[in-house]
Length: 317
Figure 1: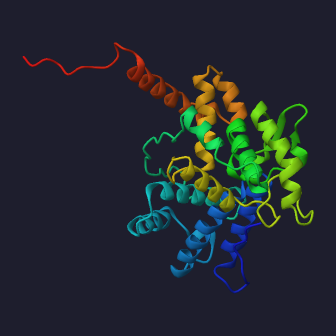
Figure 2 (figure 1 turned 90 degrees about the vertical axis):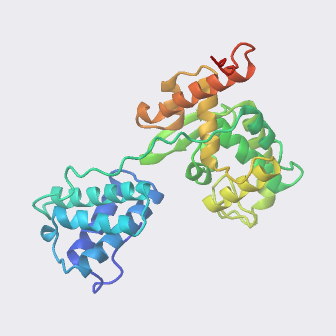
Figure 3 (figure 1 turned 90 degrees about the horizontal axis):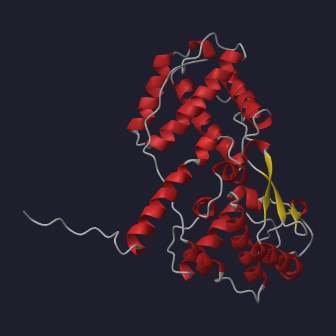
């Protein structure tokens, strides 16, 4: 659990106590991910240090102008628009918690709007690029068996990095070809495994994992070279290594395979609500970004392959 308080002498105690209670509520009541809790914790620490330097001691002393002053200060220090949006979300949540808990009579962040972010379409791989990537790991070694199972599972199920790294063996039902995933907000979903992913996982569990597990210390499916649970950083390194060997550059991440999973499903005719369920999105609006990718891909394929689609330059008058 992320905690703000390091000692009773650090900072304004009422703010820190409320900050820790707020983070606990995010964890227990809303099921926030570890990444979210750490990000909110970092933002809150810096914000509370600012309040301490400005001489604030109690939540009721903080007004709208103080919050705006802090946001302006962070902007002048070069904080990106995306990071400022996340920061404002942190401050809103914190001050809303203070207000709803009766620790503050008002919410100084009410009706504050953040910077408008450009709509950014996620990067995806083409089907042939994914297939090329899947063939890179060497199946004659335990790590190669592991890496092939990782790539197949990410692409077959559209898992987030944390979901894959935290996957316990009991979540795999290879007989039914299903994976039980616990995603954001502790929301559980079942995702089918395709035949190649099922085969890769079975071979890894049978031949690769026992050779990696020095001692049976973890129930996690995917292990690192030392036999411990694979970390998110370790997963990123694995993907980048194989992406380079596949000629895909250094920009590959677990989320690229997740985006590719969703996009290829939609291109193949899958219903948007089904894709929403498979991705674990709480709202279909989040999933709809992939319909834009779908249209762009179809348009590009039409221009590339239809004999009458290529536009010629207009004749000069």
